[in-house]
Image 1 (cartoon, rainbow, N blue to C red):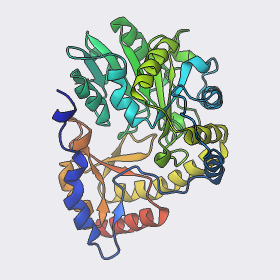
Image 2: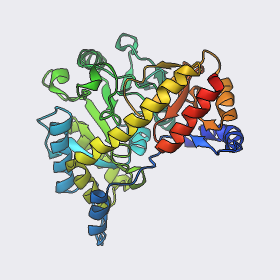
Image 3: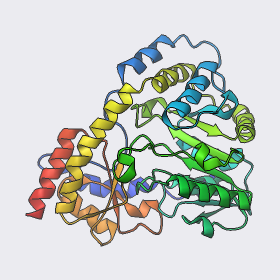
Image 4: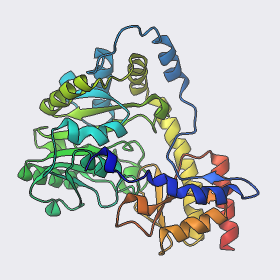
Length: 370
């Protein structure tokens, strides 16, 4: 199996529901895609403008400035104090890295890539691109012999599942037993809402409490798309085992995977400014506090969702039926079918719509509940 054998892009199946929802007299409320709608912070836009004299080829490895900013960010925000420039590298967004990591690590036919049971589909796409088998399993005890790459996602997209230190430590031990690379997709780690994450920082797989003194075969992936509204910049990075980073870097050089120089400069500025991240989190929290109770009052149960950018909701029936009900109210969600065989009775609702539209959705849900 290769790129040509991939299924049609799944979001095409949502078009009829979008068309129906768009017919609502008060317009569409699009909660389906987690694409930011808030302005990119001015401090970041200025940084991008300052760096537009980018006449030379950018460095695949990243400038010294952006690598230092990534290292400092992990120490300040993620509790990972001992990284060096050799442990980090910028990427062209995180999706391309997720899709290409099996290729960059030399994984191929006969190998196994593990991903969460309820998962962003690109993990399985990456396995398909290189002809490897994709296995969905959450419990480290169920991770199979022969696994070469294991993905975890904390907080999870779409379900918001978040791994604590003890769970991450168990995952690291099992991956080492298997001789597998453990890659942790941590793109929503600044967005904790419930339980311990109201006051505690969400841990990274590179946290010293997790690694037992060694980063060997461990990788952390992060994106600035949501916390800094930089989805259009394609600004992300990878950190962890220096040996793996060197291997991935060598392959990326051959493939010409170079983040644009102005974006690298803007990333460095964004990573050093915590104020805009806190501001953005307040916006997401405000929307969440409007939407969540409205969904519950309308008969949905919210599962997981203690962190991250989404509400993972179910009425206890097929997701397409829930999609149809929501579309009748002018609300567009994402069907759980897109996130694996274990999620066909859930829908995913994003917190990225403007507050006015989220309030409109809540009002429509309230009316339907009555």
